[in-house]
Length: 164
Figure 1 (spheres, rainbow, N blue to C red):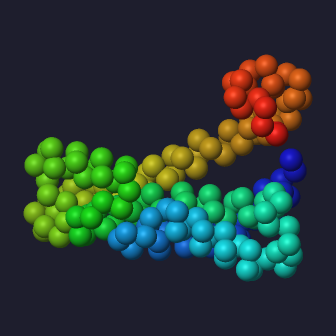
Figure 2 (cartoon, rainbow, N blue to C red):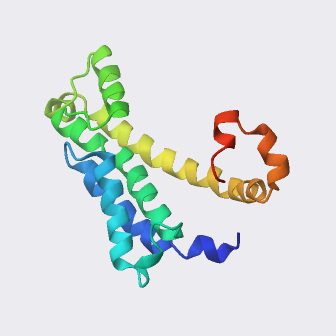
């Protein structure tokens, strides 16, 4: 895989991430809606939409970017309204309740240091994730280049009969 194949869908990835962030910030929308909206945006903005559904890189990257962008933005309804957007946010909300914090509008009024610490922690985790994942990109490219005759024996049996 050349670096050109990685750079090609960057515009679609950024736009789909924005779509996912907006979907995550709205209560009740969720990641499935964001993934479908990201895919539809990539298909509509593509010059050749006939390749979608046949392994087009932009068609794979757009829904994944939108789906992943929902996670961080799903904290907005939890902190501001007390509404859990997803299962992971519901677990965080339960942890807040166990520690005596009430998620919702009063969290910012009574415990602003917790809310601001949560936002700063999200920014730091994004930076660390970027710094860790970029060097691992070279390793992932090497794993993709492994011939099938070496790769198939280590794949679990039910997955082995699917097309690779």
